[in-house]
Image (cartoon, rainbow, N blue to C red; front, side, top):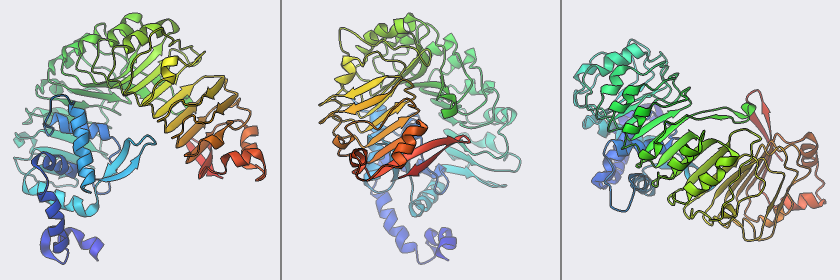
Length: 507
């Protein structure tokens, strides 16, 4: 009865009014700069998992919820706001990565009802979920959830609208409907999130939204970004993940306020995790406000040199790196002292990465590093990364993790190392490692040596390995030396790729 009647009860008409008053104390105690951030979460449906945390933070920034401070980036402040809401128990942490980074969060149902109620009172959000929906002309944020009737009328009256986000459209969101909507009232729109919409192209009306700061077209069928993208002079976030866009026009260089530019399409394991990035126009170094850039193709040494001008970069994904561009890339890294995450992919699966350099880049903030390509030797500057927490390596023949190396590393992935035969972990190496994944390394002749030295290891996962190794691990004698090396690990899993998904068996 409580479950089915909760919506009415929490509005103050029943016994749960007391709970409502208590929860309102937490809401009313919020400083003004956190209220809008929390109220915006009312756009999500009940039990909705917020997995794209970066997208949420970018949206808060674009909508002006973040009060910028000297010496801190807006993204850092937005994350501080999110953590403050978590510390107040108003947002729940659902999952984290091994390195402690937030992976998924959400709202408790009780609190969500309060926030939805407050949002309606203030005309803060309107949510379209059914056949007939009414909203105030003063509504500022519109969320569209699964309506199956004809698109609702009345958009032309939404003069105060600042954001539009869609979720799981059952009927395709057509280009013609979107054009009609954008021809109406939302001239001051700042956020347009069309992730997953079945769009083949971008309506020309989008490029008339002069105040637009956030545009997400991920998961659409869009193939071309037109030259008119240059008209969006205030755009700060352009997200084009899982699209078929292969190249950006030179007009993208007019968007000098861009903080995040992400263009990519990724394959799954059956595709060897292939990644398709984008070809950049010459002069990408002019976008000096960029903090996040991916997946840019290093199809010339000139592009690699241009990256060195982006000194605000926090995250960089670079693909199609040629052996001869390696030293040039490291020279650029010498200037990118703010990097937190770095992902490098060679031009071919078997391509060699030459990242040796006489001078080591000072990447003191780098916490995540992924190197995809053949490494003849792990560069000294990689070994000296003291803050590294996640490391992924591909295409190595032998690996030895030396004593004292990677003191803060919490997650290690060895992926598709098709030449790898053995791994050894020395004492006092990776003392904080918690998760160790070995994937697609079919030439490995046995378990990594020295696993007993990883005293904090919680998960060891072997997937798509040789049948001989899998059989050996599944049939370990409890008195054997190999069993003793893994007996302290709570979870040892064996995975196989079956019909497009992983099947995992824990020993």
